[in-house]
Image (cartoon, rainbow, N blue to C red; front, side):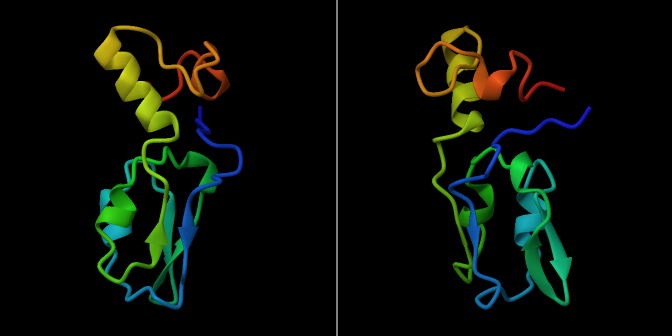
Length: 104
């Protein structure tokens, strides 16, 4: 089963013109959000982005931006630290609409 974390991947952005083709985003992304097209990175699966921020932190050219800590990654980690289920947005609902989001 393929998990979708963000329906629209609202905070993830990639400027392909700034991409140098170093492949770091592909190497660090835990959910294969990125792919290479013609020597530059592209977003392959925006819905798989957990907004962890690893791609942006490792992009030396600054081609990737993401608001880390606002998505499921923050909810999953927060839930683990609190010993509770992951919850997005403080609504008490399970993270991204599924009580098993982020678990494999």
